[in-house]
Amino acid sequence: MIKGKSWMAIVIALMLLTVHLTSSAQTVHAAGEETHIAATLFVLKTESEVSNAKIHWAPVQGATAYELYRSENDEPYQLLQTLTGTTSDDYDLNIGSSYKYQVKAYGGTSLLTSAVSPEYTPYSLPENLTTFDNTTQSTLMLSNELKVGDTYYRFNFAQKSSGGFGEMIQQTSTDDISYGNDKVVLSYTDHPDLANSKFEGINILYHAPTNKFVFWAHYENSTDYTLARVSVASATPGEDFTFHKSFRPEGNQSRDISIFKDDDDSAYLISTANNNSDTILYKLTSDWLDVDHQVSVIYQSQHRELPKMIKKDGIYYLFSSQAAGWYPSIPLYSSANSIDGDWSELRTIGNTSTFSAQSGSRHAGEARYGQQRGYGCVSLDVWLGRYAKWNNRGTTASRLVL
Image 1: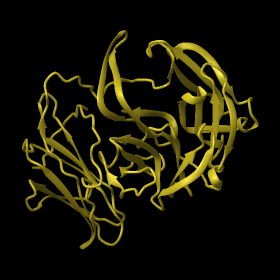
Image 2 (image 1 turned 90 degrees about the horizontal axis):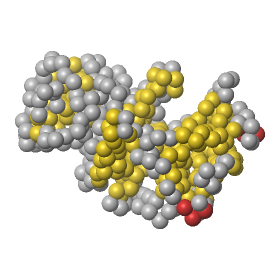
Image 3 (image 1 turned 60 degrees about the vertical axis):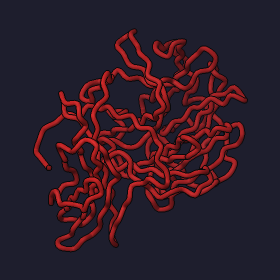
Image 4 (image 1 turned 90 degrees about the vertical axis):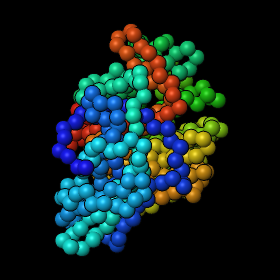
């Protein structure tokens, strides 16, 4: 039943990705603009049953009203509400039952499109959980993957006073908690391409065969987004970086990017092109310092950005957000048995606003929590999503959502 309760969601969900081609969200739509619908189960404060759902769907251009339906245990859909907004709450669901939601978008009396959600099953919370309040600053910390020998490395970036890239600063640690030993390892004076530049979508990986850190990033000049290039640099751990070049891979525009390392140590560049209309996959050379060849165009005319790929149980998953400027957007993913494809259709995951953020990086396994020196360690067979929460003026005062 739909109610007007106030609530506070306690973020407790860590997702094990075991879905693939046969267990996807079904999307049904009529001619016209497509929408997607998803729900987030949540628990009310002081309660122990995750028996409430916040339902979200993407707005449809020209829609004047939406009808929201619910099916319990595959019974016929029942109308819950007619509304003009794109979110609704559904309370007091039955533990053990399964639920699906359907939304229909109308322009006047004409049906514009409709969509069906994945299936959701309310449940009771297990005991002895460590919980994190999403209204306060979290003490949860991600483990650093850049470890060579007994030393952890991390890199910060400072801008010039006039704007644009200024310095790349290396810090080291022996425990992945306390970092120091600041050292400038790349400066805007080191290469002509760095004199008036900015980096976004920075990826730094360790290439063990050559004992090098390899740096890839989306490269632009410091004032606009007209260049649409990638940039490459490398360094022996602890030493200065060498900036190699900025370029368009195989002549294509390159905007949002990420680098994926496969099990055989081959690496791939995932790049949005044609003003984020397409998403292209390239294989890198064996030293990861250049593009070897284009593998495929994974998405064409889909307008996706912030791509990030993971691999679980032999299946490849590619996550991305809608190209929506600085605004939150619906998170979607595709999967494939081979990195060469074929890739599945895009499917919804999470909710339609990515918790008021945009899809970003993914981290496997281990996280730490605690106060000051009292750290605990959590190591689970899970992937954590890291999302960018922009303010409406761009990158200033932006935050990350875990």
